[in-house]
Length: 265
Image 1 (cartoon, one colour):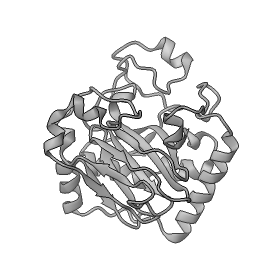
Image 2: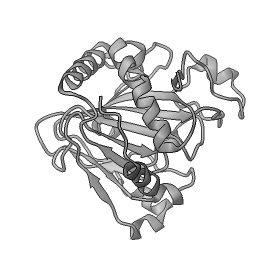
Image 3: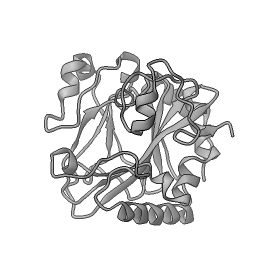
């Protein structure tokens, strides 16, 4: 795994809110992770969240036709756990964000099926059960992510302007720009990535993805990471009912079974 980050990459991440890491995975690692994701996605069937505690199933809404989404695959796949919860990626998230420790919030496979809808512009962190300006996501391309099949797009620097208001991923893909009209003047940048490469982005960086205009799948394995010490904001997101009902706003989210530490280990 290519985990070396240059000072320029770190500077670019903190300025723009995202950075590409080409060739994160070796060919062998890519094949292993790709096979593990395919197996875990198949094992879940119509269920959306692994682990059996969060009841969510795929339907036929616009959102369901944006991508096939499967969460917390680390709970059912030792291979995915080794990659997404490993200290290699964990250390990289801390280096980029400039924080001493990170925990996993959740992982998720995001698969644009052939001719899938575009992913509307949104922010990641406001969906989650904590608010942080230092949360970070990794998006690993399991297939080449191209302009034709739905690669990511970003509004560079938007993480510095955003608060925790957000837009849903719906048919009106530009709803986020109604909330943050200042983003329109910045413009957007595409981030095509070859299979085995990845993009890291801040949890408040505005991003979306194009439609898949091809007859092939565009598979990605992603994860969101939470700075150590983050506190509950009152939103359930993917928290199991038993934890959500017991949580109080302001509680530190440090459950090692649900949100394991990824760095330091």
